[in-house]
Length: 368
Image (cartoon, rainbow, N blue to C red; front, top):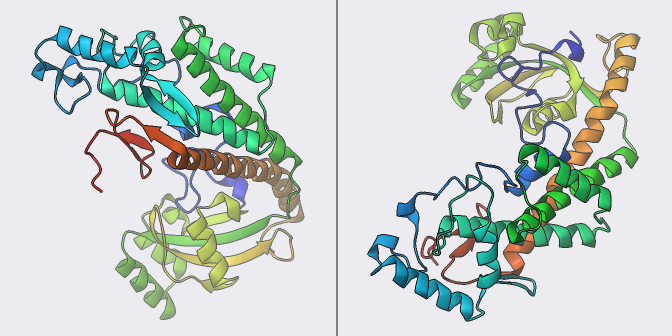
């Protein structure tokens, strides 16, 4: 069975080779995936839904708004902080004052917590986080010789207005939101261009069947039964939890980059004509029958006809270029987050940076 016959829905796709929607960067990188990777939401009505209740409001102490003597007292304290010129956050020498931050909080997109003179700290942390990653991404792209062009900003504005016709790019937050989306547009364009120019290696293909079970013990039992002479297809029908069980676990033939890496690595280690040791992936435990693995030729994969090989070669290029773009985009975004982790400073009232989740944790949430 050729690779082209495999189903592509998430529910039905064989679980050694997930569908394009089964992983974050399974499809072309583009703007949407870039925004997801950055972890920011731009100009949407659902912006900052977390922490929008009045009971979550707080002045700059680890106690609730209701604990304050009055809302006027809280507002007065906030005004003193703003008027002092104090810095809320900085990244590699670029500073964001509390006054500038207030300007952003005053005009967030529709559906955001309404600014009433005292900040919603959860919202404030998310705005500061977005400000930091936007600066870091700009620096990381610049360090790689990648610059935004006018068309990137126009595309970002058009797409933002399409999602939110009330978006105002002239407000302090509007400027930040458009900067963020422009950079993600630039990122998507740049990695697509670099992927298109990349020299491709001849694809490695895998023709295989597998049995998917939930535990290592079950997988070891399957291997033992096969060693004793059990029929692989029969065991797959009886024991496999994957959708391919009905056809004896057959996954057909496909490029190794189309499978989760653990599966490809396990098949590669086993080699053509062999049964793999139990392989663990996000789906469970696999026992893989590797019929053939190697460069895509009819000599290496005799179950494929010359026509199938030529068809596969034609379909491989976009898949390979998508993977290059995805990997490069992920690399750049990860490097930008590393810049945030290494170069930030935060007012202690905001909290502390938690690199494990790439978020600003409330004061006292992370122990030394």
